[in-house]
Length: 382
Image (tube, rainbow, N blue to C red; front, side, top):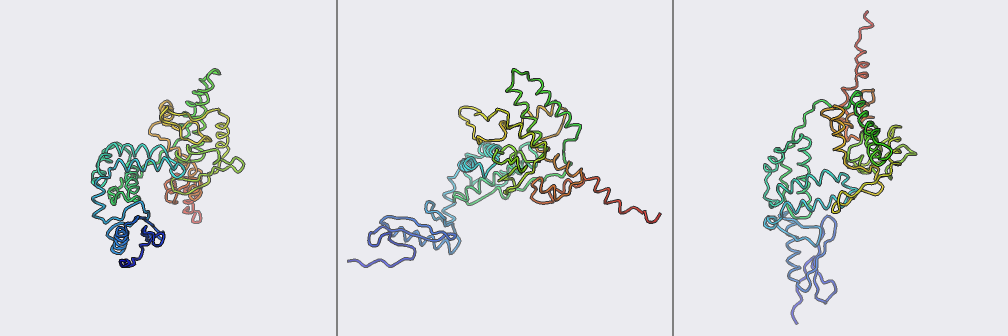
């Protein structure tokens, strides 16, 4: 009878004397177990390799038995076959499979698709930072939008790193585009009058025989009312469901925002009226085509999800230039500042992460500034 092999810590038989071997180790407080059948030597080699890498830091020890224990040199060889397009597909599935976590289901997929088209057939590890930077700079985009592409590019690599498919992230080394301070664009009263006149004329032009079209035109007015009355970001507004709206408490509950936290939006009378108007319009979101099903929740507040076309057309007819939908949020904040509302209140109302974001509107508060300067009057010296 042969000698019993020396005991190796972390290598064990699942059932004593049955000859089926497993290995186990701890990673981040979690026990990882891997089975090797009757190959004890493979279990020993596995656990010793994992122990060496944990001690030296020269590789990666995964937190899942489905992934291999690899040194950095082994990873480099393996990663030569990981295409960026595969990572793009993986991140896209993650985004589309978690709509509660990724409330914006419109813009990230578009950006991922453009990145995949440009770099998808390249090994992810071969793409250099300057290539990413040059590609982003070549697009005719605003600086803030370029920075969003950089963020999405980096997110693709983060997704790959989390799954031990890749060990680099060249997008992190790409410099952010500088965003000029500039003048905050907001809708002045005369422009709003012209815009509302255009939208109302669209409603009035629909005869009683075309009720469906009339409802669509009314929907546009309600979209504008809610944007101006709440200052919500586009993704926050169009991601609303009726479960988020509490008419009794006059509150909208946003569970997920751009800042990663929830917040409460307080409803003024105009917003409540617009929401009640939407509630009685018999409209639902439809599939765009047979192969592009509608994935919006059944209880979505907004039956129409994309406002780019109608809003751009309405601005043109109202002779309003250099204005975007996001500028309605600037209008919300600007009007609060112009009426002497404190920066702290603006911060809470708009859901800004820091008061520095709200401070951009401080210069619009002329009344508070004039009152503050009045202390310099030489009234006592006259």
